Length: 347
Image (cartoon, rainbow, N blue to C red; front, side, top):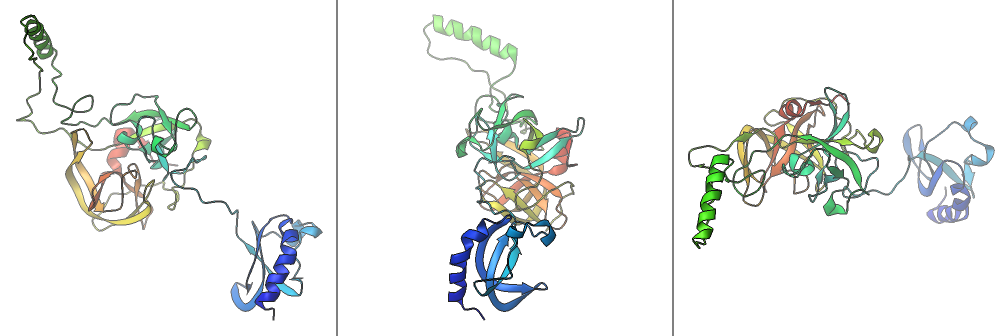
């Protein structure tokens, strides 16, 4: 029986020749496998991309049964490639990697879905990932990876914003939130009075505001948006570490779930709360109230927004991740996402 020293010597002498053979991608030392069972016989292992029948190979591409007096074995290992980070540039790009509107940092490409009316493939993620929290316009560039991960336009453009569900917010200033008045009469009166104030030398100015003391914040159902890829071949249907998802189901308490996201990769969790009403902060003093939300154990970090929540047993889409804390992760119900964006998972 060959010793380790004999095998190393044989490998050193033969691996250059072996690597030149068609289909061979590596050479090593291991135990010989016979009839599907691993034996105690050490041998020279020749790694091939795919095992093929002897009749399909040229004579000089055949692997001899013995080399330098030691046995050989042929093992199929597939195409060996360097593992890419989820924040890298991917083409074609799979769900689970970095993506974003050109004006945001980065979020997660959640899933490939289809427009119910046209059958077009879309990229699914959050409003705050693809539509810059209401600030974007349809047709804006979507880049992969997101800007925080080195993406820019037009070099890394992968899609254009197709549509989004607007998020109603309270607090802060600017579009998408704030207590400034939208009444044209109030704004006009304030402008006239401010002209008189300037004439009289006063430094004070009037600003019309909404009376929010007696009204509740408008509730939202989803933080969601879709983008149309520049071409179908820039996308992969299979979510990294999960695979293809082409069905949906309702969330259930204690359901075991999983997600694949830009920041924390593949994580698992459990659904703890259903039909939740939660207030979510969007920065700059803005908050939004969401109803009918799914809460799970903590399974995310910033940058995972947009990840698809998937049932572990059925591999069906359950929700769309968009917010969280150190204790919980919050997801929109997938039925609400589909209805409001007019999409399905028939991929």
